[in-house]
Length: 213
Image (cartoon, rainbow, N blue to C red):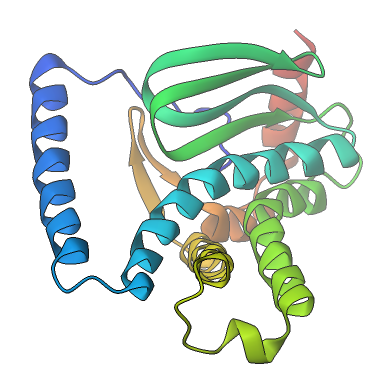
């Protein structure tokens, strides 16, 4: 997700307890389902979840990469929500990894006002775009017969799950909608692409001035 005003406040104590309790129950039920009458293909669900967490980071770096290609700056890249557990800089851009890496955001800003709407839309599209590109590359690499065949081979199951998670994430992000944040509701990538073409010159000028400040 890309939005320069996006913020996510750290979880309160009660929210943290509720989160971990719910997570523990879900994981216990999930583990029981896999263990009972175990067969390798049941691990596909685990592989899907692991792939989703990895793809969150790839998705956000897709936004950042497109911003750099378009000549825009990036204030920071954040993967996850909750408390920050790791910080570093990537090419001079602050990077934060937070407690729950199931979503993220990038804060881009224009360094020039040449075709800002097109650049803004491309930056929004780059997150789901890189996921679709990865899925397509895996299909080419593995072959359609392998990718769309039921199997108990763990390696193939992981690749299939990764590609499925990538396509699912891209589709969900491209369906225009707004999502809740600490500052109200913000557009997801699909809605952001549409809104980019409707933003005024004054809006982009303000973001340019804020980035230069």
